[in-house]
Image (tube, rainbow over all chains, first blue to last red; front, side, top):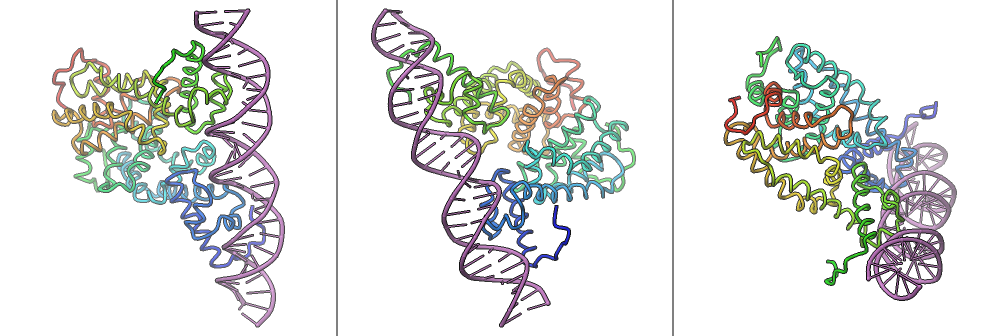
Length: 209
Length: 209
DNA sequence: AAGAACTTGCACATGGCTGTGCACATTCGT
DNA sequence: ACGAATGTGCACAGCCATGTGCAAGTTCTT
């Protein structure tokens, strides 16, 4: 929707635009309904200036969603682990490491108004997760007492919850989300502790149960 | 804060007040920020009439929280199971059964503005849960890789998430929240499936692992 | 230094929600 | 049926947020 003649923007303008998205990310992480004024102020700008970069609030929110989704999807597509359990673990850990970037989209994802946009933006991540779950249920390493679709949602909601509620808490490492996700995926806590203590170099068929 | 001379309210007025809280419960379950107008309308009243029953919005919200908390706490205090695992299972199942009543407070519980009030109202439930977790970690039936406080929060957030996202979904029984909560508590899915298949009549020391 | 891009600071219209006042109708209790 | 309690319908003020217009500054670019 940008003008066809893309003139190369002034340097400070580009920087300010970036700052806006950055601050919006932080503010939205706290409360997806923060006012534009707060965001602009956090970026060292005026509310009025925001409308120089984005036509309306919706556009700014969308920019935040898209930036988050980019990170998500890039991670989902560059997983190295072959084994489903390893993949799930790696996915969780890397999402957690990027949580600061990703938290905002995570919060917005709960806002009904942006649900369609979010769903579209996160489609690749969800597809990858669905693939992992399918493989895991097939090999028996993931729980089979709930259907694949439900398990995907369970994992997603669990990861979202941990990222939203524990990110920034003191003494919280990536271990917590990993433990939570693998738990919800069906593993016993001893099994998980074992995995964390003896990391697989490359996942073959892991020990039964 | 009611006047010392409690005149016995007209019958219809009492009914309308009840309806208001009921409808507020339903509406808040969808969106904790619904307008008073919608709630009043749902109760067959006018927005103006609301102010005949509650001094302001805050009072109505508080009434909803308190009603929900009453249910919560009553359940927490009448658990029959002795064994921690059984108690956790029973607690989850009974909360789920009352989910329709409880959903609103659950949604409001996420609203920062009412966090103090909610925390106070739910204190008994949290205390009971803490007690269950302590006992379970002592006997070894609950996970020990996270500290008690974190585990309590994990269980609480998991239950909240399932109630909020799955309540009302078709083909969803109380089994799902139970499976989720016991999973996050550290049990393997096979162990859980086993428990659900062979319900204990009364919990002694259950099978190891 | 000059021109363009960007920002500010206002003012204004708009829309939604809350909380209140008041006259009038309705409904309940007895 | 009478009086009091309750609900209605309106009007109003206040708050807060969005989105726009415009004149005046400031800062980048070349």
